[in-house]
Image (cartoon, rainbow, N blue to C red; front, side):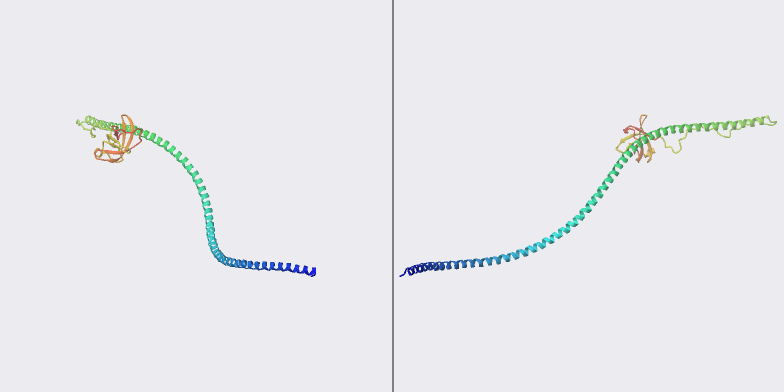
Length: 287
């Protein structure tokens, strides 16, 4: 055989061996790809099923999310409306607060002015009360002097009335004597005695002033917080609204205006208090 034939035979043998290896490899590879295909197909079916389930769950979650979003939007709209109303109320409250603050400041000024006015009035009232007390004390003193002057005046008037009566008696006696003298001087005259026409008056005593209350004098029997009791009552001539002057010795203590009258005891409100009255001080209606 020729070398070329031998080479060709060798090449054919090698090609056959290579072809057999390729076929064997192809057959093994084909079986492996089929298993892999089946596995991939099963995996794909599983993934498709899972995808379908996930898609359904996604759709459900999307619907729930849209429903929740709608509810949240409605809630947000309500909250925004409420916020708008609250903003309006807040502005109104702020405006009212400023208005009230302005009023408070104004009233504070007015109150301060009132406090100063009240302080001035209290000071004026204290001065007025002091002046009133002094005036009452002076009034009591003047009334006492007036009563003394009135009593003296009445005494003088009574003396003048007595002197006038004496003068009239003397005038009548004088006329009587002149008539007797004229009769004695006549030719047929007889001595005739005449009695005075005006009778002789007794010595008069000073009369009590018009409207004056008889002199009542008693003792303080009880001293309370607002009432003072005295030992004189209705049987002694005490009447409601009578005024008693309270003395301790010659010292003026206060005066009492009677408000309650009993048979043997009376009570009244003290005024013009110079000192606190005590049990045993004497009370009188005469100044």
